[in-house]
Length: 419
Image (cartoon, rainbow, N blue to C red; front, side):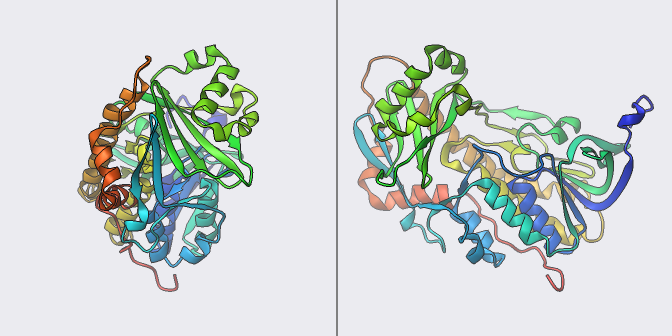
């Protein structure tokens, strides 16, 4: 804090901890759970009063289900309301194709679980309460880093009781693609780019409405639908920066475009009453050039924003958290790891991040960008997709890339006695 800080903005209290995790999303909550399990004094800061945020990543892939299995949490986890997806079918122009079949993946849980992210996070928070070393602070919004020379030594956070100073030997940024941690640490971002944005909305679903289609592509249009039990979760893909143009055509035209692509949504689109029911997700693919400074590490979306292609963002964040605990927990028990030791997380996770982002970029550039080009034309299924559709065992390979990913992580971090 500098000398010019107004008195009412100076921290009224100080908390000391071994590790401060900024952000209570999937990366932050999984890492908090693992460090608390390891007996390491840890505080997770979540800026909101609860985890209830709509239109967040709700896909829990087999790689994450395996982590829940390894932690002994899977039975209770799967009791939470969810839907399961195994076969991923799409309509490309007028041709139906299958791009992935998770039943062919060798996994303990060969399906994608669609589960509200707030249920996932609340589950981890509740299970983590048995670890006395773990504290989750809600309504704690990190606003700045604390420095000692070139080292980060904690954070300043706003709380309902006023600003608080949290002194920590290690600060970990898990605060998403708009990370205040990486901004304050002046960590440079490499932008890869994305040709599209996404409009998220819900459409009501009747009990007798069933459809296995996952994605629909028509000339100039693309949409993805998820069966969420009593509603359809929908993602309408638009060309980058075209949201204002879509709104200018009017809500009736938007609803007509949707129902022309997916007639099954005709009744449910009555739920989209105003543009407030449609949320814009600005798609970005980027990654940090370096993930660390002395006393600081960034993981998850704070280190690498993923495209929604494949719905892998949550699961990459969880994998980062598991790798971080595997690599650092034992060392963190003795004090802050060195900058080189912290950078082991990047060295472990950068390859799968780069590979996944490369695959997303290829799909964006060769399929989505082509589909979104305006004009009255036919839309042909690319050759490689026709081959996948014709050869079932190839559907298992694509499913593995989506479901398990590149270099999956497994829990090797220690569990403290009694945990």
